[in-house]
Image (cartoon, rainbow, N blue to C red):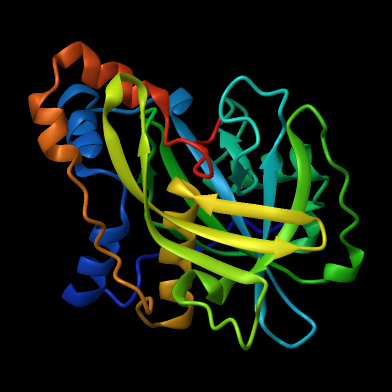
Length: 264
């Protein structure tokens, strides 16, 4: 098994870094809902994703991503990090992330050195999602085996792209839209960061929770803020305040829309 011993990471701990993390976390209304209505989250409301990093041919850090199978009932075709809900047999979040990566893409846990857990996120379906950072020590030994019931593609992206505004003259394959508005059930809209990437495996869009997690991970690993404005112009708090209570609940259960899959 890959090592599950790690240090909990939350950046450099100063007020500035905390403000950065707050600005890229999921909607605070969801977190407030959890705090008021679900004081103790059970294991069946906890999940973990694996931020699996390896060195590219040019020495850059790259992260493994997947595209969810079109067979899935929730968020089919969305880009996601390997991961899923915690099982009763999982010892901790690290065990969950490694087990799910094995099940989804055939990643041998023995090839992964876990280095840290990041601060958890609250997904739109009220899962506590813990990002587990691991280093793929021998990338040449990783032979992906996709679980076609869960994943229909695997690809990798440069981690640093989640901090940059792309320079087309340097890399025409990276494109980025800083802010996109999407509509949920009931007509409520929300804002999210969206990253577009052209690869040999096809074109992919990374958004929603996955993008937020990778922005935070890249900010911590590279020890700098993104080159774009992290504070999204979001009117969701006003929308939620004006919406009937039953509409808000439906909206929370709907999920983050294309490119931002929740862990399922």
